[in-house]
Image 1 (cartoon, helix red, strand yellow):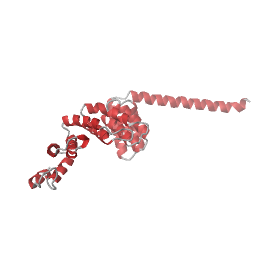
Image 2: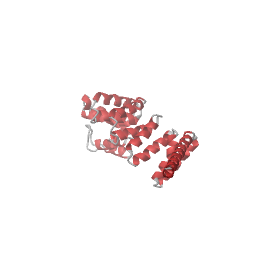
Image 3: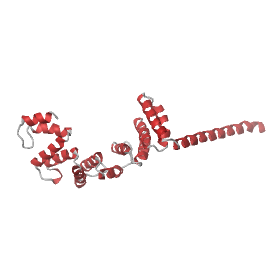
Image 4: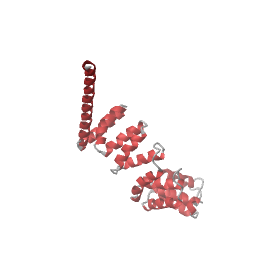
Length: 245
């Protein structure tokens, strides 16, 4: 009986020893990650970018993970990005969220994109709205544009809400954001959102947007004076002016 059980006992001991070593290594890596200096975190991020650019995807993951686990938001963002590129969407969302909770703006927009592209299916549009609303209240142009667009067009789980769309557009107009001037011009031109049509005001806001270099506005102004549109006559000097922008 002794001869029969000795190898089994030895094998169990070997497995236990392997588990102890494995757990110890994992804890050591975690401790090292927790104790990384900022310079080490930045170096890991830079090296991960190099590995990624050389198409060494898994090496990039290995290099960046300790810095991500140490709580360095830019590393968490890039680790999420690598997972996103590998179609590991749930893992990507998890790490984008970690960085977003630290205020990492690009991660906030990345996780919103995961939601709106339906790459994660257990997050609603409300979650995306909740992430972007604080940014919009600080006049973040991209957040305002996203909230305006979602309320204007709606989604399967988000009804069209003209009042909310105009609310966010108004904040963007007050911040003199050119996309908002362009959008407001189109609303006045077409009488959308129960607004009275006003061709003169539509041209004014279109011009303001164009003067800030907003390409869609410039292209439309060229069409306005070429076609003509917005009750304008063909005007070669205006065409030349806007074409030079």
